[in-house]
Image 1 (cartoon, helix red, strand yellow):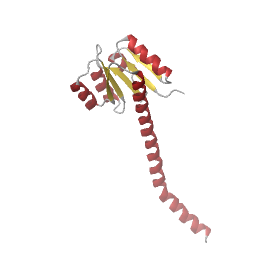
Image 2 (cartoon, rainbow, N blue to C red):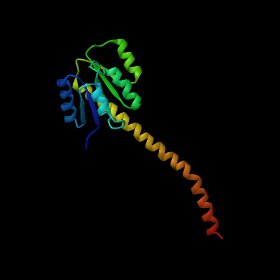
Image 3 (cartoon, rainbow, N blue to C red):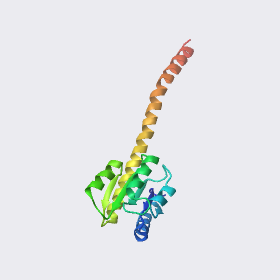
Image 4 (cartoon, one colour):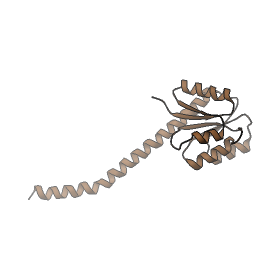
Length: 158
């Protein structure tokens, strides 16, 4: 069983391949995209647990990709990578909803840990939603059980 599904977006084929091979070896299902436009074609809301995207790419850059992905699925978690760190762009990216902003040089172990955190947080949110739904179903059913108990009590003790 795969640990999660990741979309890797980078215009540098070597970097894209490196991410793909490393994350696949870590147990993830990986889909590769060569730029933001390609990523938008491959993106389906709810299909990916994490998006890893380079910042500087032709056609659609990482910042624009982030905005468009968030419009399609506000819960998507995006990890932006850049070789040109700038505090202003980092602030804008985080404000736009990126999970994190990572600068090069990259350490694949750090990326793996960030991806694990993203996926574990998503699983925790999903578990919480399921438990919340179960709790409200239980609360809503209590009056029905009380009514049933009263009816059965009247029938039983006639």
